[in-house]
Image (cartoon, rainbow, N blue to C red; front, side, top):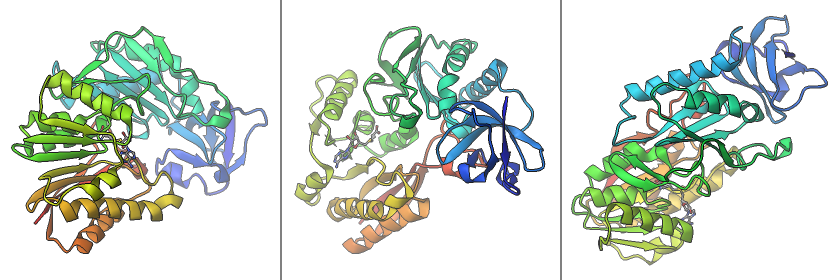
Length: 392
Ligand code: SAH
């Protein structure tokens, strides 16, 4: 195996089990090293720190082990079994819930690897060249998980791997084939388009928050902004909402939402959908038109340089909704930007509230569910934050 030697003192973050080595921390590396290579990492004094995947970016190594455990078939089988057992203990794998995240990268100590399960199909996504090369090993071990019932593995990494690595990944089944695209979440049915949809096809990370929304929907006039596949809309209808309006600027998202509503509530006239821009919709809507509003926009800040504009975006969006919601109404507002902290997001909602002058109570603070765990050594893994607020 190739060896990377760190600069003096740069082993410190590894001693605290942080899984990334930045390129600036490296003193020497072999000339023939290539992206995706499995490398052993040593301190300046030669101490073995662990094994990881090398790549050419600013994150140069993602660590898989922090000791001398070999990274082989058995390693992947062990990590996947651990991940599977945890989801089973959480009660996420039942006849009425066949949708969950099985591997959440660093949070499951498999940096660069995401696996989402939709019934008998697992969608595998590599975020590092090393995981791209490990894809067949991972896929084999996914279908070998006892009692898991995973028969098909769809590999989807065309947009998640570094372009410069020139790996030319192809989105396709690497084991099995298409069976059905209908999956169950908390008893509700959803079509999941892993072939063309965003990410792996569905935002599993909102499952618990959607269940909470369902509890608060009875009799409410609901606006689901940035609806994508209509997850929140379907739960609101199930919870007895008086009406649900779904908004997304993408016509494809509206088609998906309509299909998912029809799958669960065929012919239900309580639902309407609009393919328009969220800010335009909020500008044009009447005061008091809604009792419950969901704001779940795409990440406004994909990197630290975008924080300032993102904060303005969150402020504007929340201000428009807070200003117009029916007195006593409730807003579920989210940020999935990793670069925006919980405190920053709260500040944006605070500023938005203050500008409207309305009385606003925080009823709940939301985050990602337990199948999106965060390694205690890698707090950057916490990305989803939400507030449930009531506006007087
Ligand atoms: N709430 C969804 C996930 C939202 S993803 C769920 O639970 O699954 C973000 C969505 O916002 C995408 O579908 C995207 O098409 C939409 N979007 C992005 N910019 C928008 C805008 N300016 N107005 C309306 N929708 C927008």
